[in-house]
Amino acid sequence: MAQDPQQPSRSERIRGAIMGAFVGDALALGPHWYYDLDELRSAYGEWIRDYTAPRPGRYHAGLPAGASSQSGVILALTLQSLVDSGRYDEADFCRRLDEDLFPQLDGQPMAGPGGYTSQSMRDVWHARQRGWPWGQVASLADNTEAAERVLAIAVRYAHDPALLARYVAGNTALTQRDPTVGAMTLAYGAVLGQLVQGEALDAHLSGKLMAMVKDGRLPFHTVTSGHLDLPRGAEAALQAGEFASPDALLTVSSIASAVQDYGVVIDPAWKVSLVYGMPCAVYHQFPAAYHLAARFGSEFESAVLHAVNGGGQNQARAILTGALCGALGGLQAIPSRFLDDLQKAEEYLALATQLAEQAD
Image (cartoon, rainbow, N blue to C red; front, side, top):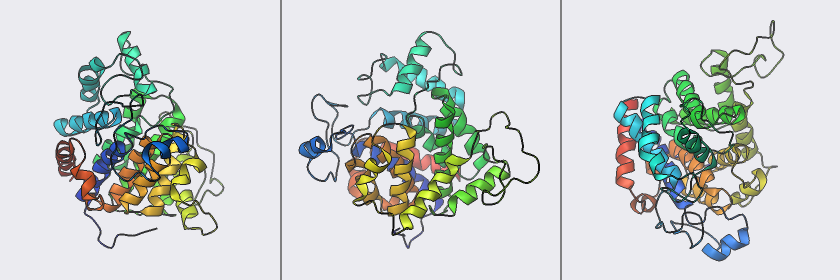
């Protein structure tokens, strides 16, 4: 794994994570959701290396190169809520969805800002139209929709894993109610928070996260001791609010170990999409993002472009990878051309900077 000899500050890591997510989102705007890789290469060439506009009749058609999808729009909405409130405020976040986003949607997939509305957000929109209250509208969709916005909450509260867990889990549950989705989304947020704090994405990271489970900061149920050894004493009952298993926290270090194992080869790296799966579900997307971030570290461009060139749901893969690598390398790791050509880059960077100042 490549290492950056110059360690960025925590503020730079926060800004890098946020801008990395926006850049990843925009880089995949044009070539989004090509499951036929021959068709992808025919449309965009052998290697996509910059922003591209969607082709007519495709997802996000009509948007210019460098624009944000609806994932980017919602991430910006989440950032604005955090910055304006000075903290995570669930009521303010929900109000912004109701007042700023939902009036632009019609419940159909190909509608609204950013050119496509995810299944989970469509389900929530329909429920709100029926008058159902927040807290009762979440969808069973198993995509990474929530993760693509709660990453902002994770970097804001990286210094306090208990608050990070509380707010990330709570915000996820507003739109997605599958417990596996919730556990894997919180695990991603916890990993991202640790990277912002300067930890390495390596074989030891899961052990550090498990220690937070043991001391009560992360709400996962576990009865094992030490390195997943036999339990000590009577088995504890699963407590309300806990996820049933800490396995989602173990994934990242298993993948980091595989990256370091010369007997495990995925070459070229974009083929993570074939190994872990090209669809939208969390169990395809998070492992691929962990692999790319563990493999390339702060080499932001390589990691995110391999995420994009893998096809399928490459937008989620690039957002999640971009945030991880941005946290590892800081804002300085993101090539200037990606920032220069990103639509609304100044607005996004201002929000990221304000968030970093509040987090400090």
